[in-house]
Length: 82
Image (cartoon, rainbow, N blue to C red; front, side, top):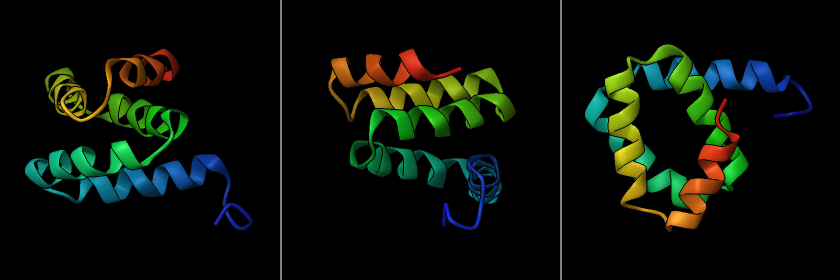
């Protein structure tokens, strides 16, 4: 994919996909995908989500993620979120 798209284009595609999900489905997606990704990948997704989501939705997502990863990993992710 990176051969054909820039990082920004890939992020935009992911944001569009996420916007098409119900919030409950989105929470499940974060619950299962975050532990499978590297902190930098998670931070990239969270940065994009934070830029388009209401603060309350962003905080709900963070709380969901906190239940699924170690504190050290959560801090690593948050340190990279812009």
